[in-house]
Image: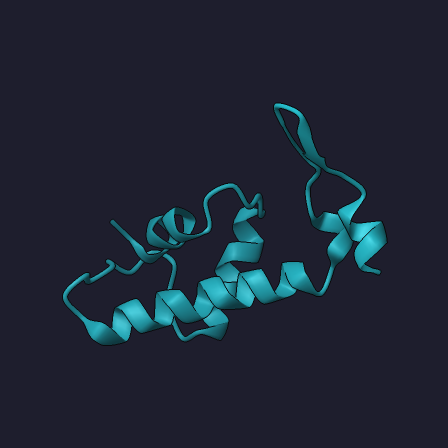
Length: 83
């Protein structure tokens, strides 16, 4: 498993282009094609740091947040309410 695949596992459900993911990884000092080392605390920390950067970017753009509906409960227009 490479760093790109590991990051995609961490941020499942968030759709980003391949180029965007590469930029996030490079900003954290990782190469997307390098092998992910699960035994390395540095490698884990870097992946988590990258995932946090992705989540912070989404938090800064509320219009990207989804609308959810489940049974009789729905969360819609979340971005408008948040802004």
